[in-house]
Length: 606
Image (cartoon, rainbow, N blue to C red):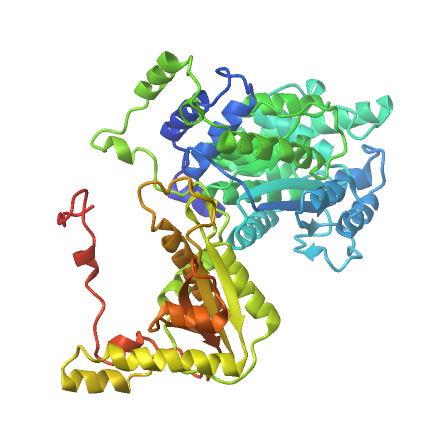
């Protein structure tokens, strides 16, 4: 599209998907423990989503369901629908209340339904309907243009804005629906122009009109299509396609097209519903052909124009249930098929992983050989570096790293009692730590008794003094001035223990490195520390004590090690740098000094 054409309407730029990812995703499918191609139409679906996301194993976890509502002037002026124009507003309310077919399905799948009034002729009587009204319904397209050029641009922008809003909230898939009495007339007219097919072959009965109404509908559409064709003969390609929506379309149709273009520009797949979303997709594809790479046909309706549209888009519908209900119902019914297909891809074992003889080795090797990197690229850089699991939003990812970098070993505590639910969450975080062989060698002794805490402080103080003996006088004096524990000040101390016998004498994965039990307990401690920091709770690790002293005070069995005493509570301040670094005891080693490439001591770039 030239700059001149693009300036006529703000259209998001859409990149084509990566064919190389499609091929490698198919190679992965062929390695799963199933006959080749046995998932049928689900396999190209999986590969399509993989190519959209740039990941061999794609996932969809945060769908967004958008319904655009608008009225059509042709339905007000002529009997082309079984229902009166007032039904658009009434059904928009029904959807917002959660009592329409689409809203019921969306609720079942845990999706929020967002209804957008982009052109209902009256005010919609429900507070949850989003008002982005371009006009109070379109004009009667049998008598002239349905909308002005400015209204067209505004309606497209509504769709763009609504999708970008959802994407910013973490949405990774868009399901579209619409509501508008008379909109099958607009969709059929658009299809006739965009496909250059006879009107008679495309006009159906909509939601159930009689034959007389159908004849009237065909006549009105034919006259309007002929009028548009005559006026668009000398127009440029993009002027022609823009004018067809303004002449024959609807506000909700233009908004859905904008939504598709916006989603595709952000590499988000779009699940189409019936004829109306199909017509919008067809128009969007005229503006940017790459948008079709991002579209998934949820179903095919009995409307003759719908099958013709899907064929032109190169889309095979997932369902064929003779649905005429609209509102996004067909797209929603396809959702569990889509997510089920992706789960099969992610969780089905490969022949190699399951240690099952692979009868497809030759075919798989040939498919893999067909996947070659672009000229000048490394073979291992063929697939973009994007994660398989995207169940964390960027804000959540940032929070994890923030907790890691802000974690500090704290020695100064306030006396305030910690809420029981906060302590419970910190302990549960520890209990969810990873452990070799799932042995879970830890226990947590929660200590609040001040007499017990003073006994622990006494044995720690004894060892603190002894620990300073190896240092020269000046450094010993400096060490002894450092505060190494807050056992009495902190409201709670947790003794984390490690039981090396947990799991029995033969723990999976522990045959050559027996100390992995202690490593596992250390993971539990780190989980607790990060959880505490996220809760705004300070934690200090007290490690200067004789184990037998602590065992005696706390009644711990001889074979169980008291791995750590963790003092927790609120603190007046979390320092920006670690205590010992601030005190001049040491500094953090340079990162480049601790990372080697492939072999010890090799500091070449990874």
